[in-house]
Amino acid sequence: MSKYFDLLESYFTEIPPEKIEIYRSLYNIYKGINDKVNLISRKDFENFYLHHIIHSLSIAKFRLIKNDDKKILDLGTGGGLPGIPLAIYYNEKKFVLIDSIRKKISAVDKIIKKINAKNITTINDRSENLNIKSDVIICRSVSSIDNLIQWTKGQLVDQGRLILLKGGNVNKELKNISSSFTLYNLDDIYSDNYFKDKKIIEIHR
Image (cartoon, rainbow, N blue to C red; front, side, top):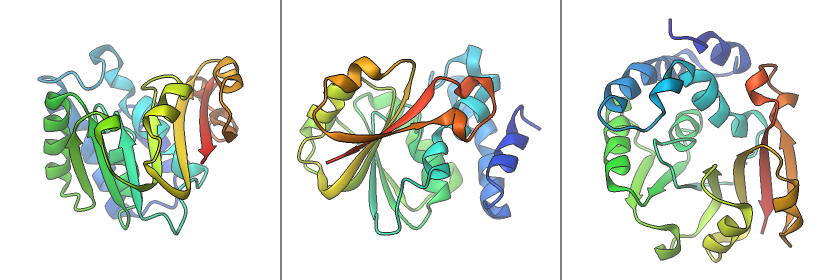
């Protein structure tokens, strides 16, 4: 069994067996593609489940995607994170994964096809060029909070939220924004040291 996979099952006991099997398959799918396209640092790949899948699913752990949310946009998805793990979890919702780098989107398309995910589409473009309205925009360590707020102006419905996975000290960044926000500490839900300085910032628009 791949390292840390058992933590996925222990942290998310509500995930049904058929979805657990999809998460289990992701390791070999990503590894085969990652050998050709560097989606995840090869030095970090042994931590695939802890650093990438479980980290992505922290948004679900805090229940930040609501019943009424229909469309979720993953901005700067890179290797499909956090979009793909969340789309498996919330398979009744539509996910749009966006990245400006063509080879990454092509790799993500292969992953989506291999897991037969019908609720995920991809776009190869920059966020500021898009004319899409979403209920939620998610993003993992792409840029500063202020930049992300600027780039996503006009792309959320009324009462939409921008949900950011960030690491380190974010206090300085948060002082510079005028939007209201809620801060979640991942070490409140995970015991592993990796999550000690990891946070989710939910920005209310």
